[in-house]
Length: 182
Image (cartoon, rainbow, N blue to C red; front, side):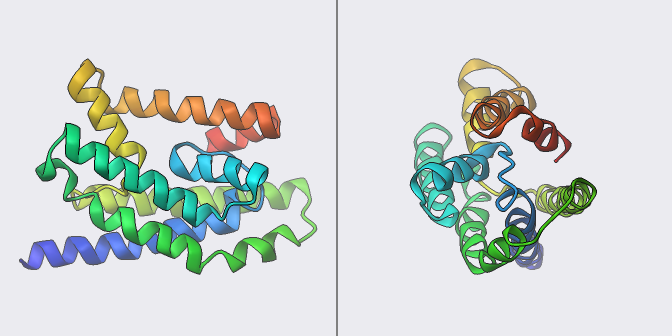
C-alpha cells in the first residue's frame, strides 16, 4: 500500500512539472512534440481549442482503447497520469500567455527549450521509475507492441515522428529541430 501511495504521489508531482514544462516551453513557442501534447498544439493553432481539452480527450480514448485491447491490469497504472496531467495543463495554462507575450531572441528561445526539456525528461523519468505512465501515446505504443510485435520504444518513436513531422509541415522545419531537442 505504501509503495502504491508513493507511486501515485510521484506521478502527481511529475505531471505537474510536465504540465509546467509544456506551458512554458512548447505551447507558447508552438513546438510540436509528440503525443497528445503535440496534437493539442496543432488543434489549438487551427481551432483555438484549449490544449488541456485535447489532451484529456486523447487520454480518454487511449484509456478506452487500452482497456479494450490490453486489459485493466495494463491500464491501471496509466489512469492517474491520464487525468491529472490534463488538469495541470489547464491550471498552468496562464503561464503560456505570459511567455508568448515576451520578446525573445534566439538564444533565450533555446535556453527556455533546454530548461523545459530537462524538466520534462526528469518528470517522465520519475513516472517511469515508479512503474506508471502518463497515458496517451504510451498506451498506443503498448497496443502496437502487443498486436504487431514492434517494440514499445520503436512504436513510440514512430507515433511521435508522425506528429512532429506534422508540426514541421504546419509551423516550419526549424521547429522540428527544437522538437527533436526536447
